[in-house]
Length: 136
Image (cartoon, rainbow, N blue to C red; front, side):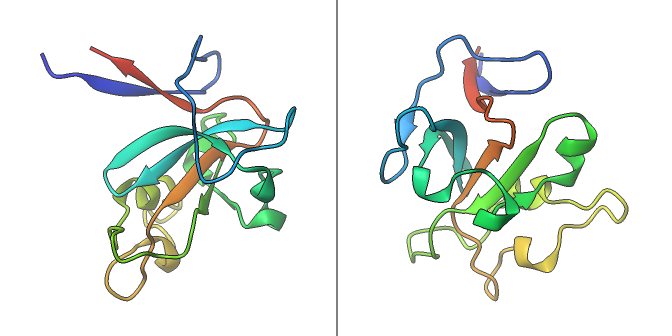
């Protein structure tokens, strides 16, 4: 049987003890937000660094409209400038940014050779954890 994963953090969902790893730096005590770092096809649980908190448009975060319509207040942010070892595409990020009325993501979220999307962070605006939960 192939193992998979669930994303925890929707209405009424939470992980009892998510595996947390830091993403280049640590958040200040009391301000840590658990989120997900997406690198191409791979994802990992992270503590969002204090330098990019709070999760808001003022700090470079962008609203994920479809999850918001489902009651999950998600925002996404490019983590670092594109690096050669990163994938140019980030299909998970592209799909999180789909516009509900058109079914397409804005051009800056499409990735590819002319728009090096690279790594992104995803977190909830309400401070609740948004994490990956391994499942069988």
